[in-house]
Amino acid sequence: MSRLELKPWEILARLRQRQPLVHHLTNWVTIYDCAQVVKVLGGSPVMAHAAEEVAQMTGLAAALVLNIGTLTPDFVAAMLLAAQAANAKGIPVVLDVCGAGATALRDEASLQLINNARVDIIKGNASEIARVSGAAVQTKGVDAVEVQADLGQLARELARLRRAVVVLTGPIDIVADEERLLQIANGHPLMGHVVGTGCMATSIIGAFAAVEPDLAVAAASALACFGVAAELAAQQAQTPMAFKEGLFDALYVLEEATLRERLRVAAVL
Image (cartoon, rainbow, N blue to C red; front, side):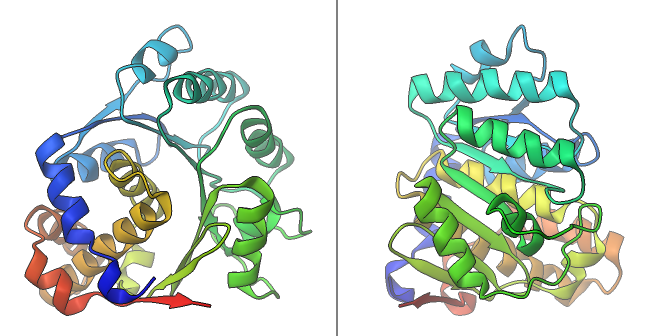
């Protein structure tokens, strides 16, 4: 896929027009920001966590976002119910394996969800993806540690093993499916100084997946839009909180001309 074939502005326009419902069972630390980032892009976020309603709410949605950042066993059980309902409806499931590699509970939750439901997009940082792939690495809480491996190959192998799109975030984001690998170089270092940008990225991926059936294209386009917005926000703000506010505003006004000018996505053979 060449740069010209990736047109995130078209997916963004579709998202703003359709306003899809994106159901989240997500991280309590970042839940507001996840809802807000979907809202400013034009989607409709809902955060229903109770096991008694997750399947019904998923039945109304166009995509399901799962995030194990603040997990408990009953929460994981509710996630599984929601994922199975999404599978039955045929809508995409996005799983953020937040903190995989930090504790046995997180490792077990990630595998329980992946093994017992169809997960269409698996997203994490380098050590999280390595751990879900079976490598003996330990994540520093929810922050990545250095992984001594070819990250592109790591993403490719997990994508082929799980027949899913794999998103590996870092200074250069990687999106892989069974055949393609894309690198997204948009973004700004201030993103690493704001709690929740990783969770917000997952929510944006879910929103794009709700309106774009090619899930690798959806994920890469989502990350490109988020990265370009971060670059724009950083032009106006030099501190984390001012940057965060500017990030929401930049996403809200993001337009085709800006994306065409700033898009930095490369296909890797």
